[in-house]
Length: 214
Image 1 (tube, rainbow, N blue to C red):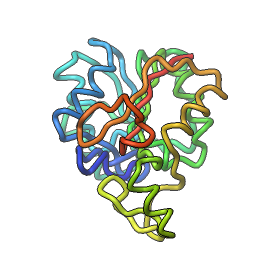
Image 2: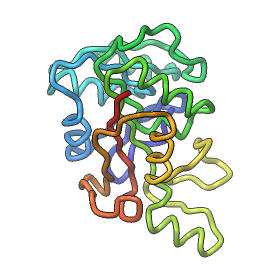
Image 3: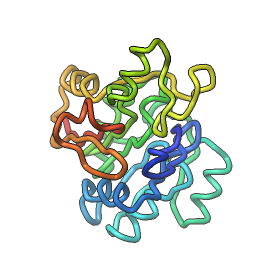
């Protein structure tokens, strides 16, 4: 369900829209370091399976991807990634509590109609949840809005009328949402062109990243 995972950083075609697989080495490694070696992983909106394939080959992980797009499902199979074809808007009721070590939502949250419910489901199904999404608080976006226009950037490459994003949010917005849902944020930072941003990430990073647990 993703628009491209930071086009300046990679391309993970997303869940319902086509997935998020990072191709930029620094971005992939940054996300992968948040996942414990050998973890059982569920990747929501896994796209063509590239991120999960990387975790399998470099971190010794196992697990499944969830994807709705036919072409991406086929790409996952060709990469040797276990994939379940499922519409995430239907929820994760088929999965038991804590049935995975890690649940990933990489460039998926902004495409979900039931984003808050799916966030709670991520925390229920996984012992750890990792979410990454475009940070609308990034300074170029603020300048565009100040000028009276919706932003079109490398991270948000669509016009307002053809974007696959249902909503936009900021790093600070997600922190409030996590607190509201009783989630324990274990780590959070921004990403900008593959670099980790920990100082003023809401302003200086195009991507927000959060690792959390219940």
